[in-house]
Amino acid sequence: MNTTALNKISIIIFVLLALVPFQDFVYDLFLMKVFCFAIFAASVNLLLGYAGLLSFGHAAFFGSASYVTAHVMKEWGVTPEIGLLIGVICSTALGYVFGSLAIRRQGIYFAMITLALAQVVYFIATQVPFTNGEDGIQGVPRGQFLGFIDLMPSTNMYWFSLGVFGLAFLLILRVVNSPFGQVLKSIRENEPRAISLGYNVDRYKLMAFTISAGLAGLGGGLKSLVLQLASLSDVFWHMSGEAVLMTILGGIGTLWGPIAGAAIIINLQNYLANLGGWSTITTGAIFVICVLAFRKGVVGEIAHRLKIRI
Image (cartoon, rainbow, N blue to C red):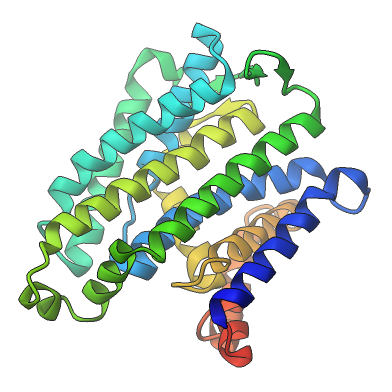
């Protein structure tokens, strides 16, 4: 019954999202940005909500894919799907390397290692020539999907972004409902018991970390196409904090929680932009209120009260 409810809700949401270009209530660019950060937040949730691993270094994968995708699109002139694929491959490989080092520790030590490794990537991004330092890579061309569908028109780019978001959602859905996902949950709940049952816990953690890094890279690569920009803020530790914030606000361990959290945070950033430095304080205050009012996150609390899985 829970799975049926999840499927019905997901179908309804995607149908509504597909109808967005035919109305004037929501800006296409706003939703495209939400799609990018929703994928990013969902990648953090895959690690935190299902494997119990808190990473403060996911900006490294988000930003590296953003830079790589922007560079190959601008300098090599590849199609957007190839540019995204190259960015995801780079972030996945980086995730495997970082994961191999980080999973040796647990808890706060794991989080600090990921943060330290991410700062190394940030330092490299400030030094290598192709990132253009603080200027970033600007004017990134969106290219032509499959070689003939121009993505410069906002509507075409919206459909492309929705398609990428849909594929990422289906991948996460498949992972968490697979035997692999069940083992991750068992590791989160009781790691010693999972070890006693014969599971190679480190191997499962590494696989989860690598998949999560690839998804974060997908969000970063898509962001560089949507906003036509890759910048240092993409690899800064603050970006990792935002993704964790989106996950907690929406609901850890829920499929739609990080997506709702991303929509809320992006909305707040847009509406509070005129407040300057006070925007961060206001966002923090709203976050505290939401956490106190919704202990399981916005979506998590709704799912708990309705006794459904979303």
